[in-house]
Image 1 (cartoon, helix red, strand yellow):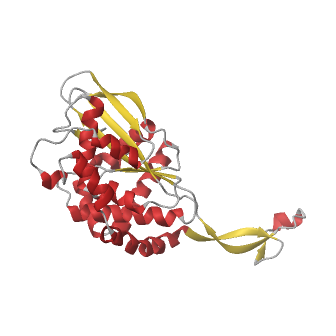
Image 2 (image 1 turned 120 degrees about the vertical axis):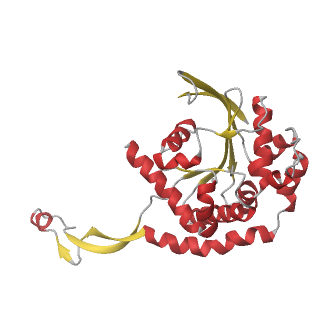
Image 3 (image 1 turned 45 degrees about the vertical axis):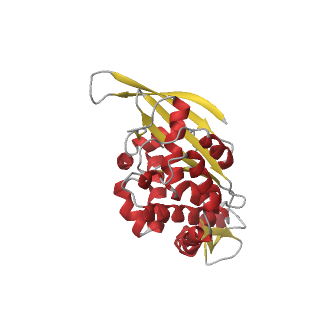
Length: 294
């Protein structure tokens, strides 16, 4: 695990001047290291198990590592076919240079170019990302079913994309705590082949998305994660692209990489009703952000 410190300066809503948030960023080697670190994090004192799942860290880790079965994986497998069908739109007709074909390009012909004809063929639009950075934290009002639907959509997309090209998948926890402290964790999930069990555990369980995420933030910063908030503002601001750009800068993302926002209440209806559409919406938002940056 690599730990670094970042500073984020922003204009405060409450007083004139600039407020600086010191961010602790932890880059884990794998999901197992995240679990072992979580076991050393403090247990949650409040009684809201409906929110955390398991408040005891060792129990939370055990649940994610040992208690998830095929019934948790089945929704993701069922969505693979839907994702596959939706990705067919990435193929389009192209006219390519050829020594024979449907029509000539006259200037090329007069110049003696042996490939002056044009032949139509199917071409794939390789805008599919190389690396996915996906925020694991979800709002308190997001239901367990919506969390599972969101995770299934993510898993199916990753499984489908991995069939075509090498990809990397990272689970992100990003929280703003009191005393001007912030926390980011980056946890890589194996994609060769896709580790479906860890993908579901990291994105579909209250234990990982809330209990371990908040406790690890407390251990790393020394500040209680009670009443913490979203880092860089609420995900509902992502239409403006500012939050996306801040994360892309902090994570040193490449233009082709995709950052997916955490599960905020305004998104819950969409990823609960149609996770395939939600996944594509997230990718399109990133294309818009990158286009604006260009």
